[in-house]
Image (cartoon, rainbow, N blue to C red):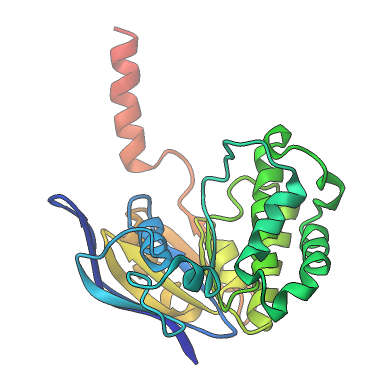
Length: 273
């Protein structure tokens, strides 16, 4: 069942169009991966779904809500967001940051399990031993895991994750994406922005590939992960291997490549003249 839908969404800042006629859906119980090159509009689309930026045209429905008109409390009970930037400007204890995920449910029946949910979220991302630490003293990877803990504690039907693995080591990358799959198994619609195409292919049920502010392709991993689509979208030769049924390995052409070798040659020639 689709609980998140964007219809012909366009977004612009002044004369600069960032998204044009973007239509995607995310279903309850699945992980939808947003992939595409830098500047394709992935984070912009997530911000629009979150209700943080206005639309030029089109519409968004998130579990029946219009994020452009919903109240902050309605949105906080409907979607949780992990931003790409997990920096913190104020000194909070780690446990207090995770507890912020429970604030939308204050004075409701769901508040009775707050402490247990906070404990479980801290443990799930392996930051429970940091619970009494000042978050500003943590590394970038540790702060990212705390941010994911807050999302877990919030328990919303729609979950938006913007590059949740960017600051993480390989073990915690796998842990984070496993938790994303766990939220989907619990019934959430999870939308995750990823640059790691192999990780997206392994953990996502469907893929929406953005390029130049529009949707270049969307569908199952099988539909989107073709050499033609990925090579064109990323403007780089890409091979797609299928070592086993249902498994995908994305392999870009290695080495300098034609484009960069020529540019690098010109640069080094200038340096040594």
